[in-house]
Image (cartoon, rainbow, N blue to C red; front, side, top):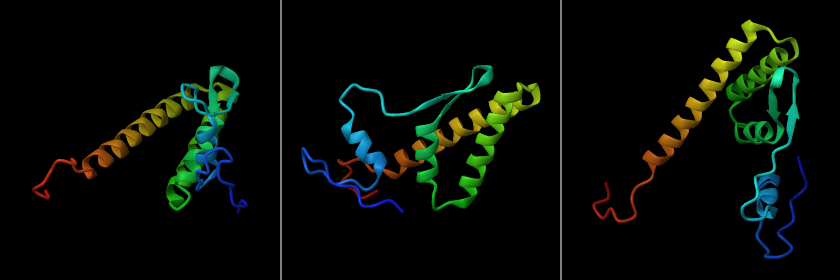
Length: 120
């Protein structure tokens, strides 16, 4: 486990994890920190996004298993340029996008409007 992350030296904001700390250091308008690993066949693996996703699902072993297998499959497809693996990669990209959409929709449905006085 990582040592405690110090609070921001400028404003004193505390951080729960290294991702929050690095996000805080990024200037407004800058892209989030996300190292790109260029792979053969035109693929790019976004290392920062991968690590954030693994961190976010640390308590859900099934998701970690799926993410690591999907990543390994993408690396294999990028290295060997197999048409069979390309189809698999396209499916995993679609599945991931739909999963993110499902999570965003669930989050929106869980939120109640602030002006809802009826309690519903």
